[in-house]
Image (cartoon, rainbow, N blue to C red; front, top):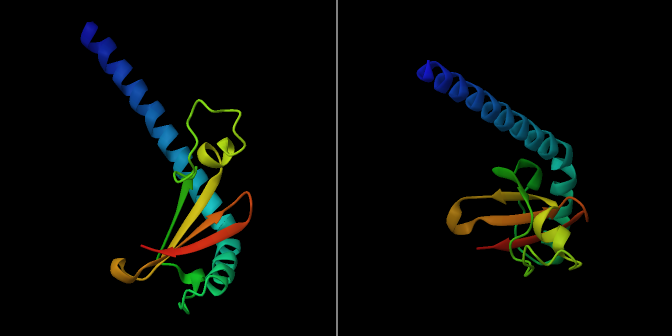
Length: 121
């Protein structure tokens, strides 16, 4: 009987985890598709302004991913009164990359602000 209960708990837990994974993946894809063109346009403008000599078409970026929060902002989790807390922990960003690793150019598009910054690693 204990084995049956353990199996049911395991099945219920796996169902909840699978549903969470599927909904978060779907939400991520929806946001990427909704903001892809705006991000590409903003990245193109930022590349021109920052004089990064890439004639890349950001609309055909080789990799686009959604990240939540910007890790480079120096705000701690407990500093909820900080004006940059939302940008650090809650705002969505699209990271676009073109090219291969050694010469890849990256663009970080802030969905909330509508601004982009282009950089190389």
